[in-house]
Structure formats: C-alpha cells, structure tokens
Image (cartoon, rainbow, N blue to C red; front, side, top):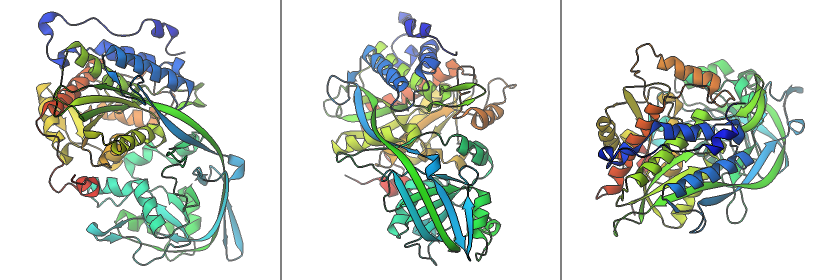
Length: 547
C-alpha cells in the first residue's frame, strides 16, 4: 500500500528560513513542504480523492486546515467556513439498458456496447429512447469569422447529428481550442434543431495515443456529473439533445456505408479542413438507462485580504483541482487512482504559495483568493460553480493562476506559461520566470487544446485573463529524456492507478514553479491596473464584456 497513516501523523512543514534569507515571499518556499502535501494527498488512504467521496472529504478537510495554518480567512459558504458546497447530480450509464441499432434498406445492424459505442449519461431521464434519421455535419462547427460552416448545405433539425470531435487543423491554436469545446458544439446543434448526437473521435498523433478507444472503454465506469442550480436543475445538460453517444471508427464505417462519401473519404476531407455535411441513410435507434443520484462536494476557499482600501475588493485567484478519479477498475492489481501528478502536485504548490505569503507577512494590495476546487475531472464543475457564484455576487476577479498537472519530472531550464500570449499576464510571466533564472517556452503540443481543458477555462469564459504554469522541455541533465517521460506519462500513467508516488517528481522544480507563480501573483496584486486582454485577442472577443 503506497502511503501510510504515518503521513497523517507526521505532516507538514519544515522550519522557517534563517533571518538573513527572509523578506521576499518566494524565498520562503520549501521543496519538502510541497513533498509533504503530495505524499499525503496521493496516499492510498485518500482512495483517489473522487468527487463526493470520503477520500475527497478528507482531502478537503486537510486543505482547509492548511489554509487556516497559512493565515487565510474562510471564504466558503459563510464567514466561518472554508467550504463552498457544490450541489451535484451524478449520472451513471447502466450497461444492460443501452443499445444502438441502425435500420437501412430493411436490414438491421445492431452495435455492441464497448465494442462499437459508449453512451453519455442522460441527466434528464433515467430511461430514454430516440429513433431518428441521421445527418453527418463534419466537425459540427459554424465559424463565420473563418468562413467555415459544416451546416451550409444541410439541415439537422429533427435528426441525430453525427460529428467528429475536435476542429480543423488549419484553425489557429486558440480558434481550434474554442471550436473543439464540446459546449460550443452542443449549443450550435441545439440552435439548429438536432435531437441527438453521435460523436466520432477525430484525433491525430499525440492526442490519439492519449485517449485511444480502448482507454475510453476502460474508463467508462466513471460516473458523470453536473452541478445543480438553485431550482435543482442540472447545468449544461442540453435536454433538447435527447441522447448523446460516442461511436468508434469501426461502427462509423457502417454509418457511412451507401452515403455520398465513405468514412475514409470523410476523414480525409476533415483532415484537409474542408467543411462537409450530408445525409447518412437509414434510421438510428439509441436507448440508454442511467442511474441518477443527487450528491454534493465542496470547493475549499481561503483568502488573504488586500491591504489597499481601493483595491482590496479585487481578487487574484490561485486555483488547483483537488479531485481525481477515486477507486475503479484494477490495473495490475491496483484499484486506487491516486492522482499524484494529477493533481496532488498542483495542490501542493498552491498550498506552499499560501504558506510562503504567511511566513513573509506579505500584504499585497489586492486580495489573493486560494481555491482548491472539486469535480475538475467531471468537466470543470467546481471551478465553473465558483466562477458563476462570484459573478452573481459581483465579486471582481481580475486574474486566475491555475496549477494543474505541471509535470515536474526533472530539473529544467524552462517553464511554459499557457495563455501568456492572450493577456498582459504574459509579460508578468516572462519577468517572473527570468527573475527565477528560467526561460519561457511555447506550448509544444497545441493540438491538445489545453487552454480549454482545465479550470482556467471557467474564468476565461467569463472574460477573466488566466495563466497556467508548468515545467518545460529543456532538461538540465542532458541524459534526461523529458519528451519520453511526458509521452510515457500520458500514454501509460495519466488517469491510471500508476499515477502515484512511484513516478518521478522533482520537488526543487516544483518549488521553483511555486516561486514563479508567487512572483506573478504579487505583481498582479500590487499593480496599479488590473491585467488586460491583448488587443484583438480571440478569447477576449468571445467572452470579455467591457463594464
């Protein structure tokens, strides 16, 4: 058993630095303090920290105690609590209650669960059946500013839309990220009258190795969730789309048989970035049974109040997701999905930033709010709920620094600041990185569209500039193959029980990540003006409204 009860009894942090080294908060950051947090949070004792589980609740109580020790004031549901409760609806697809069958020219083709398809959970009904004709709609994208429209020659009203995941490779990185966003696609389909969706993976290279069909099937045991509004209704459930299924390529080939283009031809056209849409002959019947359960989990929120009377009601939010996948299908005899890199390391860095601020008696002008959020693995739910509540309560958040899976495998010469090009946070990141003795590198895998895939997107979509700092690609030790370490992690350990404390974690590098994030946070918190989006930035045009 990795981790032990002894960790619970021997926790936390090393002693303060000698007086000569004190003063600047980043000098207070200690690698062993981060290690202590990670070794507790990624221990088997916490059972993988699944949202709304006992293990997660232990982790949340632990983080709250660390916030208190770091001198942060409670910022949860009331002035005495660090916990912000998030009401949730959990939905689990039931295998015996799902089916998919295509009737075409008096022939019936029955598809098999897992072998050919996976059903999405239905958050509206425990049992649903949908029979409708199908229409292929390319990527399911209408992007007028790019002169791209998969719907130009088709009508999906009353039909099951069959679409590829992702977006054309010819789109720039930020536009591909935005138009790959599932919520954007589903909103478009609802507006055009579709009644159901079949999604087919369209992945290239690195992405394909990360989420092959076999891995999707292996992970299909994980319940899905949505947060509930004040009326008890699930958000982003898209009830107009009665059922949503995912088909693999073998099943997709059958759908395209006798259509105007074959499945390989449709793939090739999408690879070229050609908009396309046409009818898929036959009538598709989809059925699903879903187990529904109301539950709740909690964000953990603590705040260091600002010292400036004019700026203290503005907030810099430092976030990291606390949840992982919990217990699940055993792999090599191990059923605990510990989430060491994803995201115990990120939470450890965030907690050490809070402690360093406290030890240095720093009093920034703006308030700094620390958020350990729940349900990131369920679709950024905890951060979305937090950002929505902050917006509703007119709490002015000026920036988000998110810490998610920074992957400090080994010492490096460089860091990556995801989102640096989108706002003035990029300038702050460059200065802070250089001050700590590092270079700033560009994202080497923009096809992963990571800018929309973690909690920072909950802030971005509300017009708030955001940044995500992670370890880079240039090893200090020439014998360290960082590309291979990253490839192995994504292919073998990501979202697996093996993401545990046996993997390499370089805590001095994690500490330097904390120092750079801390420098950035303080530069924002003490600046006369709040961060600004870059002129003409795509995400600003989509989400930012001048107030």
